[in-house]
Length: 237
Image (cartoon, rainbow, N blue to C red; front, side):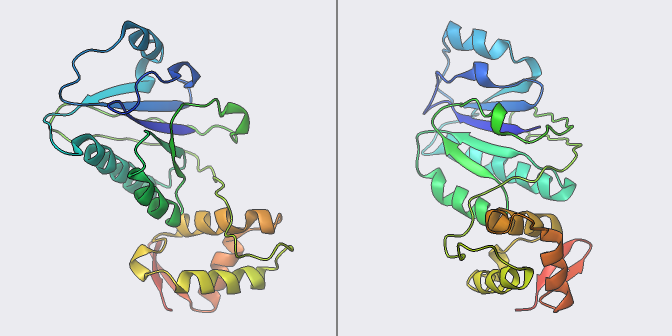
């Protein structure tokens, strides 16, 4: 799966669902408890996606109820990504900027997440598709069920603005990385080998075209800055 969209249907409704690639993408549409009418045009667009679209309606109402549901399912999917080394781009389709704080934290953990107000055609900008299967069931109040089998795909996030504009050596990347991570609480740093390697790649690839994030990761271990236990990281600084 290349892209996964979580749609805040209370906030955004008439999106370009025809831009979803049903062979490589998926869209999960969250509907408010009181939203009982959906336009025929939207039904036609989403029906063509088959199993690539899933509708989830809230079982009750309350302040920010739908937002909390999306945050829950987003966290659940990311936890599944970490345990299975799944890689895909995650988008929250909403005009609500309250999601931005959560998205900023998700990015800091080495995952790709972005809030959008439309569904753009990103096919030309994607890397080779990954092999995947995902199942999301909506049987309120049972939680979402996600199954994944993938070949990892490295995503790219904007590099840190404090990095020098010249090409960096491995040692320079290591020094900068240590300085940056030192400013972050240990509990908020990348927690697994996969997420830390993705984090390194996202921050330094454009500053070091020949970057091999695994080499930086191994330097962290060599200098005893991290220890690894079943792919879970413990920081020693």
